[in-house]
Image 1 (cartoon, one colour):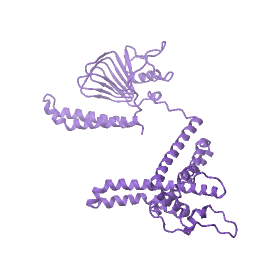
Image 2 (spheres, one colour; image 1 turned 30 degrees about the horizontal axis):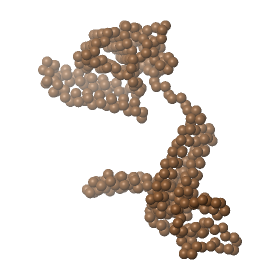
Image 3 (spheres, helix red, strand yellow; image 1 turned 120 degrees about the horizontal axis):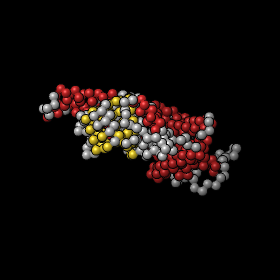
Image 4 (cartoon, one colour; image 1 turned 60 degrees about the vertical axis):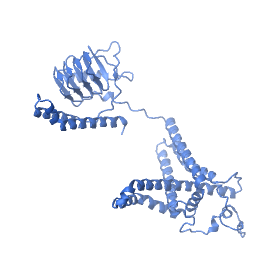
Length: 433
């Protein structure tokens, strides 16, 4: 919801609550003023309350602009005459043509009066001579207006002690007499098309270059964020990351199925935890802590799993290049993460560059999303299987431990010649430094 719409709804709610409070306190108000019968006070408050409720049942108001004076019309343009409000249809037609934006702005001149844009308030000590036009805003009258008052897409509120010596016309709004004095007639026209040209002009569609630039900036920002988080995980939790990486690399199918089931059950499990805590006396006290911990664990599992998959992708690619004789300066976990995240980023970079192309852009975006979801699901499952990297010998390992050694991944044995093993076997202690 746009902030302006939320502000309008909040203002409506505040006014409604204020009238409800006045309605509740009406007996006290009646007793405090013996000269006014209690019955008339209550009827007056109820009538104003229901008028306000009815005024909110129509179409949603447009965003209210900042309060300011409307610029005068250019020379040669006929001013708007508000001296006769007996024919609201004629006034509506006249204002519709006069309020049409010129050069991106609204310019209007009122004969013997003034024009305002946005909410306008006449203070209790103010006395305005001449007619007043308020466009896309409410007119709150506390002081004196010696002339006619017209609002477009706004209400008129005449507060106690206020005076409007002329007529009042509300086009697309309501008139609320809160106890002031109105010298002329009151007319309202609930539905009007005057405000149609005054609605906020939709932002122009971005060009292809602007779209590409925004998408590239988003992809680069996400990539850098994940890289920073991954470097922090390598620095403070490298063993756990390596276990998750091995789980995803050597048991991808099982990790994917586990991650898929985890995604399905994450919300039901959360509901069961909440219900279980609510049913116990001590659990209610632990409820906020449990919710925070559960959400944190899910986020850590999903993020750590995705970084583990990226680590596995980068490690596999780097070691295969080394097996083919490529010179790699320093094969470590930082490099693995950058390579793995870069492989995922390439898909989204392709979407950023060609996503605006009809059909082809949709296919590229769908492929990037599907690949990212598959990797994220497998990573989440690997984090669950390995207990966030705590359980090194994860259940269901389908290959022998020798297959996880650097010699097995690096060696390129010839036919009939087995791969050499380093004395002692097992994982190389310096892996990932």
